[in-house]
Picture 1 (cartoon, one colour):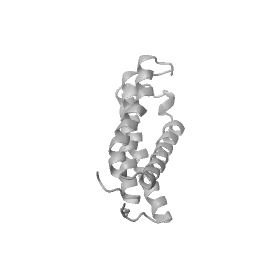
Picture 2 (picture 1 turned 60 degrees about the vertical axis):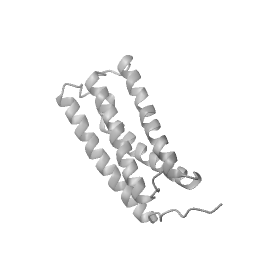
Picture 3 (picture 1 turned 180 degrees about the vertical axis):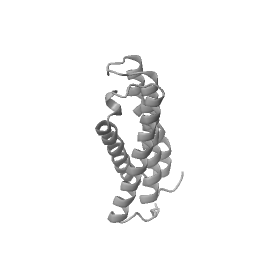
Picture 4 (picture 1 turned 45 degrees about the horizontal axis):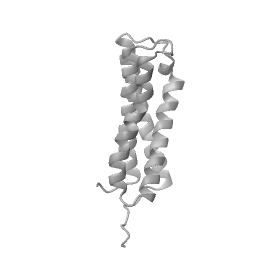
Length: 142
């Protein structure tokens, strides 16, 4: 069996810089989604719309996604193939609690617009995480 050479990863400083940039980009887009949802009638007091809540989930989600990317990249024989399947499954799984919240609104201020905004925020974090992780630790496609 021949080992397949992985593309080079970013340095620690480069990794931190790309993750910080990703966090800023994702946070800016998520802020826009929160503001749009409120403008469309969502409750501004909806707890997930408070900055401490969505910022922690945005940054935490980005960091956890990147950690998972690095683990798959290091351990999978064909990481591109694994990630091509794993990322969509995890994104859909991340939307399940939001769908449940829509069906059983246990958080004050829950509404369709608010939940759709939360779902869009998950997609933003996933998209930014994939873009940043591919830049930091490239994975060959397929």
